[in-house]
Image (cartoon, rainbow, N blue to C red; front, side):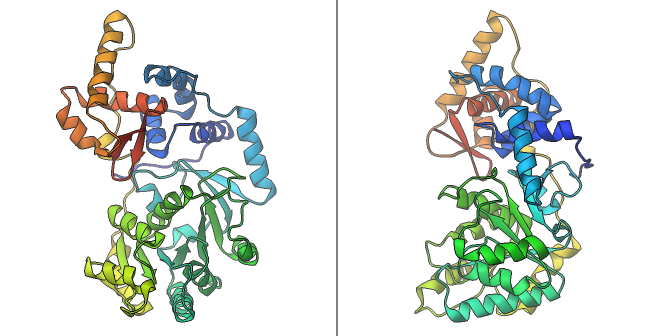
Length: 379
């Protein structure tokens, strides 16, 4: 479902940034809060009470307006800016995924996401031939009008960025926009800031840690019409990107390799599992042609879990009893193993609006965690 976009006022931008940076407010919960309360400002006011109902003992508070303003000012000093998911220049393909980041930090050419984008990922310890192949394919795809997206890592990612520098390439960072990792890519970072685009979901100053990389990977696939995997071991993070691409409805493409090379085993397994085998930029262009003619549509939030105006009653002893009973029923059906929200809705003897309200309150209280694929688990 397509929805109109609009630029935010400065006050609204501060509210969006504050809500997005609040503890326990992930991307899906953020969009649920906006859908329920109509604005980030109203959602911020509701956070303490919602988290209390979910069982949080310490009041949930977002960053102050002054803290959010400092982040915007620091970003502006390095030439960057914030774009919100409701604004016209937010990447449309990324906005279509269920856990699209509410805000993105951008540095560089803002026009690049308007072009069709293709992801390229692969081994950090890539072979010389693999790096050369990635470089040449990225250059050819760029010349064909694509923006090449990758994760700024060593190996294949770096080669892909370098190959597409002349035409435009987009790097998704795992940490803050001001953190260059790996350090040896400092020169590449500077060139991307001038002629390409650097994107980050995390706040400025955030050091990339292990938990940040899968979140970065979903952005690489979410921005792209398809993802090309070049050299990937069986436990490679590139396979996580490929899985996320498939879950997001993107095309997965893989370059085959020798069965004697461990770096080819992941790609070969992807091909056996149904990924499109590609050996040239021409193969990629052929595979992505249908997606270019039928662009992705934007969803404000996942249809299966979009909040509903009718929720739990707000006041009185009876309302509190109903809320406690509903929370107990939901918690009884959850475990540390992820459960699909749709399955929970079918199993609970409660209306969908009530279940979704309980889940919102539990997440804000830090008692459950959202998982990819519209699933939830106990913490």
